[in-house]
Amino acid sequence: MKIASTILFCLITVCSFSQAKKTNSPYKVPPLYTTINGLNHKAVITPAQANILITKLPVVKDDKNNEYSISSYIVAYYKVVNRVNEETGKVEKDKDLVSNRFFQSAPAEIFTAPLINNFQTGEEIFYTDIIVKDSKGRIMYAPDVRIFIK
Image (cartoon, rainbow, N blue to C red; front, side, top):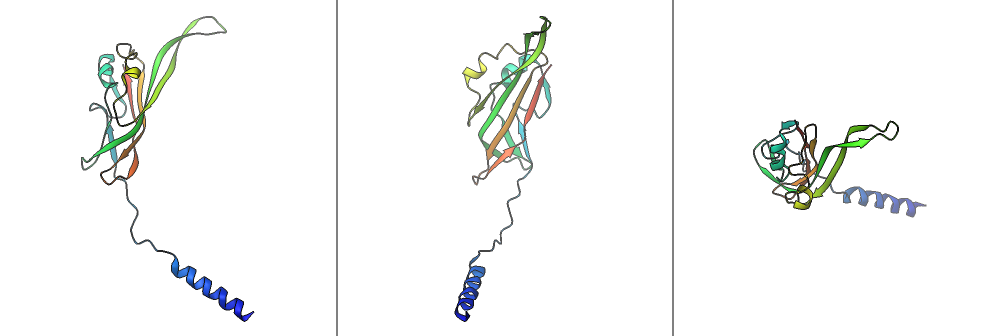
């Protein structure tokens, strides 16, 4: 019994000293700001401006004006469509969602071509899940941007 308690004491002592202690404080993410073609969250634009905007890549900067590289992001476009109500048979306005994820580049032409010159009042363009990297390779989320078409 004395040998077992001695072995147990040695194991506990070795385990307690072998655990590494962190001395560094965790990285604090600076406030990030996302813009697309100079527009911030909840901007209101015309359909002509939306034709230009849909082909642009988001820009993410912090309060010290350091730019972050984009890893990926989602562009969601809520478009106004006409639907037939099955109960009444009447045509009603509704919203439909078109979205795609892009990696390190502006939205692809296959995504933007059907949208250009077809924007209508009441539609929205939403940039979300924007993942960025800083100069040291740390990965973080940037704020979403929702743009309304008037």
